[in-house]
Image (cartoon, rainbow, N blue to C red; front, side, top):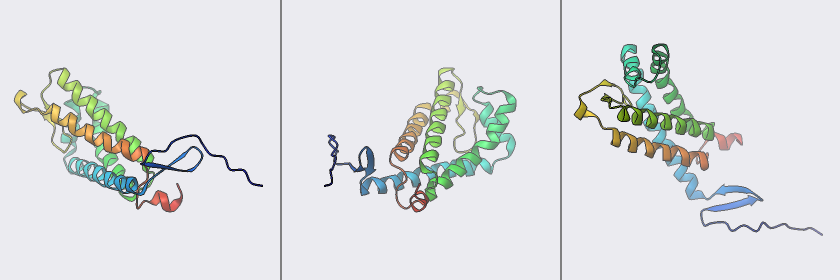
Length: 177
């Protein structure tokens, strides 16, 4: 005789359970994750590509404008950030290490938000350099609230992907990760 154990948990209309305690996303959430992955990947790749194509001096200047890092580290971040953004974009597009890529992307967005909030609070007038450029600008040319709201939207996408990975289609699915 076989005994079946049933969990006393109500599932919402957005979730199913395939074994006790394991949450499985419904098909629409898998497609929503794909859209989130592609949008976030597009933004990350574009931001990285534009900065990557700039001269190293401009990459460094954009980071130095925040006045948060020592000079030696500002250069390394200026050179390495575009590469990190493009690698994350590639991982998100193909759906490999999806949750890890989403968490790193979310942390990156949180750092960007904190950096923008920091310069705003300290009264600095800079272009965030998020999509190339960067550096000092006239006081009336800053767009800190819009930049923070934009990055909060990207943070929300990254968090969605982290909660509902990997989406369809994804290498993680094919590899059983």
